[in-house]
Length: 404
Image (cartoon, rainbow, N blue to C red; front, side):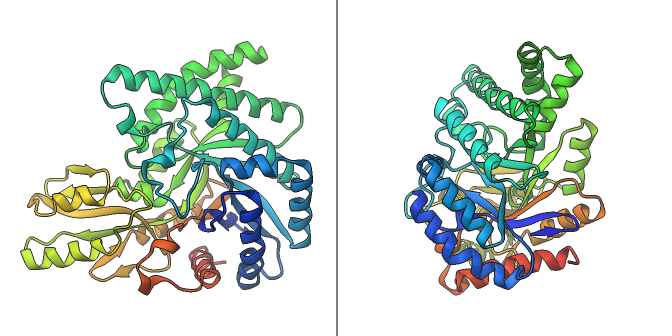
């Protein structure tokens, strides 16, 4: 739905369905119900997630036409998509395979361009569209040596530029502004502001400017402008909170170099101070154990009393180091409901969401806001409610923060 500070939706990766027919059935079941709760009299925006197989099916003319007709009949529109998970995302072990295929793969390029073609065909006239995507690759797949990491980074960058070329051609032919939104996350090849900006300024721009100059016979400044328009940041609030980054500082750094935010993904992580007393610490650890499950990665970043950070690739590795006396706080990558702050004795990084939305209210820095709590199926039982009511509560909570 459109608000005074951008279009707000939730990501349909909440709903299962890896084929288009299965996912479309989920959309038909849940979208109208959520719309009645939060946007009964105004058009409702959809943040669409399609697995690769679903994207192939939706690309068929008869399927796309039927979906466009359904959107119109239900007063809905698509303005953003989630192109991070390529394969299965429900009822299967996802873990690090959420990064597969990574950006070194031609399959990732073809999938992403297909999504952009679909988005362009559904996007309302005059609006920009964005697709969030993986942070190039997974660090543990290319950590044997610096040379291997650099090779992956170079290959991924060149493949992303193939997508940029496509988006420039769409725009120059009179089509909409479309942007690829890179989503840093813990243990991604790009996992924080420093790594994202280092890649952008020292690899993407240096490789992309001459690439676009050659393709379009344009000057250096125009080529740089195209890259900054078509490659933006997906600010997943949970991910940046896990890295202990302050929202205002992140935005200041990006702004200093003219780098843009394509989408805010509104999400919250689990966190807790780690007591020094053994029995109190055990209570905290036991609470985290309730959130251990076999489907998704739940990276943990611990803050030491001295201010350092310790990275654990998943909860089991963190549990193995639970007695580390140097650790003062844990933050875990588990997307919990954004409207709850306390999971006694744990809490959430909800305050980071409030800070980001306050900055968006003060001076909007993106047009796209998307709630992304995809873990309803794997939450501890006491937190599970009717999915339509849960999604609506999240959107209504966000609207309250926006004074809307």
